[in-house]
Amino acid sequence: MPEWPEEPIPPGGTGEIKAKFDTEGKMKEQKKTITVTANTYPNETKIMLKGMVTPVKG
Image (cartoon, rainbow, N blue to C red; front, side, top):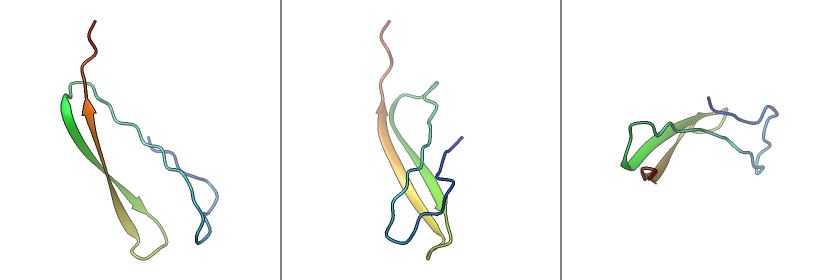
């Protein structure tokens, strides 16, 4: 479940959005897209996360 600031972020301000990705059953390069919806123009912004999933050796 994503987490975002409860208070509005003023123009020019900053905030933090947290998202988790379940790596269960996934390997190698992964790409995921997060869509941020806000009262801005445009009202949707897409952010692509890219990473490498490496199996844990045990």
